[in-house]
Image (cartoon, rainbow, N blue to C red; front, side):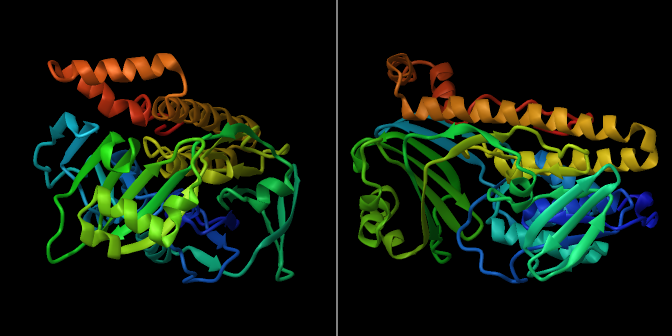
Length: 408
């Protein structure tokens, strides 16, 4: 923790104990604030599914700067795959294996279930002195030029000069402030399945993407390993009935076709999504006292792992803005506005980037279909087309920022 951590001042509130709320609490502690996290559910609540499994190096670095050892702990508990491969049908069009890891540098990424990440962040928060109020669902939010008052369903009334709202896609704070989300959602459904690894005879840890997998009637399939399991994503067609793929029998059928047959008996979680592509019209309230971060502020299709990995810099920049506003009240409004402008800009960029990846995968446009097939043909004789086919499902690379906006 930074040396400013001894400067505990008036207690600040964070709403939500998911990965971004816990990150926000750590970021505020590193800036010297006393912090209480309010969570609607009980401690130890069940959190099914792997969900956000891909943790970028920039995210690990942010966490390491907040509290020494946290980034390395998450990296050590996760799985780092070294090879990625892309297929067009049954023909491989791209393969890359990364060099061996430098033990003195955080890995380029690590794959770990969100539940495990949250557990490590919760432990870090407790070590850092963060306090928690479980079973407190936000009922109302009142803001003024001087601060925020929150009322919970337990009848508690809490006041704070600033609040960071990290209470997720159904954010009660955002709704109470009547802040709208702007955007749309995917036409195609995606079936997401977690499969437990066979620890006695594990598969090679590599990320594999299939365009038009021949075993599932040419639907796209993504296979990603994480610590203890595999994430299997199946892209449905617009006219598909997802229940044929997310029912117990349906899942067993297609998982046995894209992984070794034994994995059909190792399914641990199934979910179906039509991905939202939305950004809040503003990330702050009218008095610039509530700051929305993570899924309270934006929701993206998961291509490129832009959700949690952009929520972390949201929290970093929010904490820095609150520190600046507290240190110089005459500049409080510009400091909070700076958070609003830079992080909303980042969210719009990520929404558009995920949208480009989604359009590429859905291939509703004839030009995209022609470009994909041409690239698949050319990949037989050159590396450039294969590289494009591998990278396009994830959208353009995020622009890493190290200034006040954090990373994208």
